[in-house]
Amino acid sequence: MVYRLLFYLQEFLQDAGLWRYAYALRYQTLRMMLAVVTSFVLLMVLAPSVIRVLKRLKVHGGTDFGNKTVDQIYASRASTPTMGGVLIVPAVLVSTILWADLLNFYVFLGLLTVAWLGALGAVDDYLNMAARSRRGLRMWEKLLFQVGLAVLLALFLYRMRDQILLPENGTGIALNLPFYKFPIPLPLWAFAVICILVVAGTSNAVNLTDGMDGLAVGSMVPPAVVFLAVSYIAGRVDWSQYLYVPYVRGVGELSIFCASLVGACLGFLWYNCSPAQVFMGDTGSLALGGAVGYVAMATRQEVMLLIAGGLFVVEALSVMLQVICFKATGGKRVLRMSPIHYHFQLGGWTETQTVVRFWLLGAMFAALALASLKLR
Image (cartoon, rainbow, N blue to C red; front, side):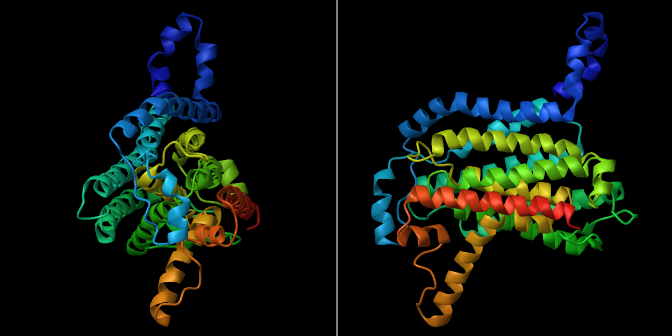
């Protein structure tokens, strides 16, 4: 909004002698930094009041983890309010609206993704809390709305294929592989399938990781920073050509969107670190995961997301492996408990050790993803 206002107020600002100061706000890098600070401060300001309201309304999550030992560990947190995503989603939306170009096509889709998945998560949290006959939305109900969003994103993004300049000349939608500089062209149906896997996969993977104080929201920061850098690079002709990544006209504005995600995650971590004052619930986890997945699609780096978000991939695979092993062997488990962070906690790690070590692994995955930009 501020970016567009500068164009309308340019003459007034010049007459007032303020244009040389206001002009700096047109720089994308400055707006990125301001977006981080804005979402962080906004969340910090709103959090105390919102947490009090959630406590008064008794918006509490369940403490039934299906394991007696884990149930005992977290029994004391039964009164900790959940649905803290109602802080994260508005912080991201307001900060992005304030500092990004609102007429940018990719920014609009980013805002749609966060609002859509945040609303879906809020309904799930509400049903999990209020409905006695069920625990949140059923999986097929979640997937229905996730797939619907993914199909919409695929259709809109595919229409912009002529604005994507591939590394080896030509335009269009293509699959870009890390450590390999030759893109693989994709038809609409294949791109739609990838979008469905990315949106559903990332949002649900972050949701599975949200089980310990600060684990999910802290682990979101490294991949969000990676795609802040990737979107900035993909939006510049010179840098994208040098690093052999697709140049996507206008996608650089998503760096402000990613910066808002980073600031919101850091602000929420202030209240979610151990001992947590609030949990983000599905309202936050689905929105955050889907947002990063969307940026990966828009920048044409879906495969890089598997590296940058490697920690979430491991978490999701641990659940799948546990379920497959349990059904195939008639009740045997390969892990003490899934997702895998509980496996390590039951193995003797403290919660703080588990969370910090997983953060470190997430940072290493993010570093590897950035390294893949140069090694093509």
